[in-house]
Image (cartoon, rainbow, N blue to C red; front, side):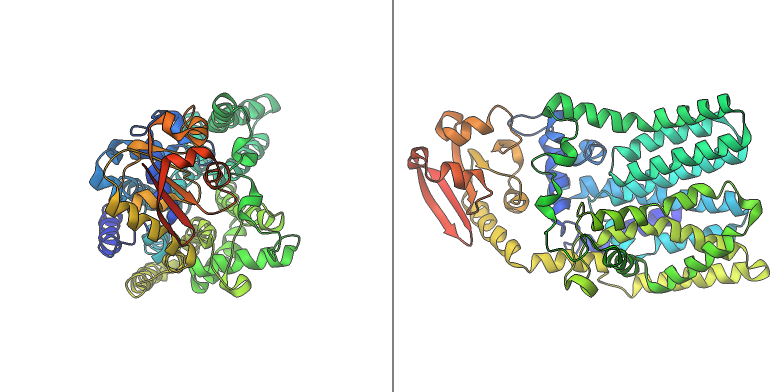
Length: 488
């Protein structure tokens, strides 16, 4: 835990000093969503919206109100850093409790903790590390329940699984797999009544988060499945119909395979595959090994999501560019565990093997200044869309002093944030009871500034640009696909 804490701080300082912690547009979006809860025209918890799950934004609240922590992203990064420490610690505990080998546990922790992509992501306000932390704690507690049959472990696993399910949707898949694991283990050990009771106990405890999110979507947005088919969550918004993975299982599988290799490295993946074979035939480790195998279920889930056109993932080898390559990072947990298990079986040389793995992982971390998951947002930052946003942001940063701003958040996440303008006076599509009125009559809602993207998807452009209401505003900026108006 101490070692991972030191590494976490060093990695954060390394990336923060070069300004890379907010390179992902989503990282900025997570900061803005959290800040709006306490600082926006319609502040309140409903500002969490209905697309991204709320736990990461909730955990950012203690620091998000401080401008220095908000605009640097530290309010969200500290959540990822603490999650990194928890994930590393529980990876160690999982392998140590399973194998009895400290050397194997150290190897597993090192493979995860020193992965360059993990080190970068734990320095950002992204949500992956919080997912890893909650998932590995859940796996550990289920494993301990299998080993000890103590109900407290099973109940604790259900509670942490609920937290995972309020972090990222991938946790829903893992949780379902773990419910099946609990059911299978219970049936083998107990009579039907007790087995069904235990499975129901864990299933209900772990499903609380999912149920709450469905109710949230229904109560506040009128659609219990708004997170899947809502205006800003439909797969068609993100996935092109020409995506080569859609309808092609082999292409989808190769895409996820390349994403995994780019995140974890072919050496680690190869060693992990050997570890899977070795551990599979280790009879004394069953059934407590099953929760770890459940983690591998995310691979076919992502393959199916690509095949069905539910999620976009681009890799250079197939698409020629990178997009959401971080989905391959989810294999870091099972890869690390299986490498640790393999090291534990090397008998007299396991300490030497663990030492070599630690040294190799450390060398990779220190010689990879720009990991794959940093290259992806850097490529975006040098593209046309980022240039458009940058121009509008620079104008607002140098001309805005006060007044309400009307602008859509979707596709414009960076504009006000990069201009160092908090969301205090930003009326956007989530400003309930204000947004609709402002679109029709911005003067009535005291709108001083209007920022519109010259795009048919922006209602400011389609509804307001040709409306008589725009006559009350003067066009101040018209460049690179953006128009900015100021009240006359």
